[in-house]
Image (cartoon, rainbow, N blue to C red):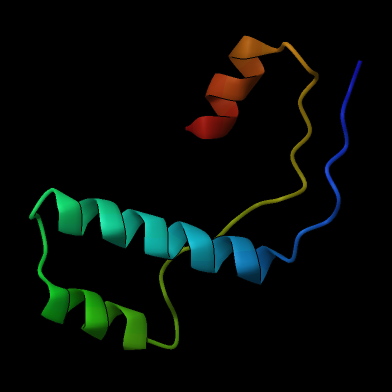
Length: 68
C-alpha cells in the first residue's frame, strides 16, 4: 500500500528545513542569533530538498535511507 502526499513546492520544504536546522543549532548553542540572521539573509541557502523520492508504507529501511 502506498500513500501519496499532495505536492508541496520544493522551495517551501527547503525553507522549512533551513529554519528547522538553524533553530536546532541555536537551541544547542552551536550558533548565535547574529549568525542565524546572516545565514537567513543569503540568497542561496545551501539547502535543497528532493521531493520525488517514493517509499512504500511500512518500508522502514527505505525510510531510513530517505532520512539520510
